[in-house]
Image: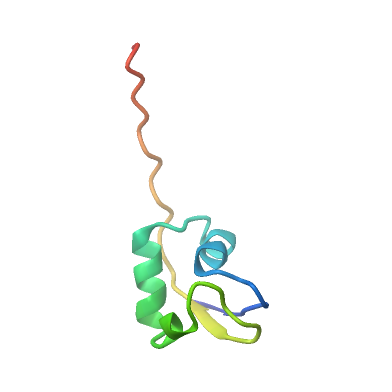
Length: 69
């Protein structure tokens, strides 16, 4: 598990993408479970919020289906 301190203007989605290379619902849910009260800051975080980043496996690549195949 990693700890991160937010910078002014950081968003949850951006933090997840930078740290985990994913920002899906599963990653957001794990982040909020690990950091109770984080949702009270709203969509844009102020500077200095200490956030624990969950350890999650990499998300499997989605299979793309081409309708012309």
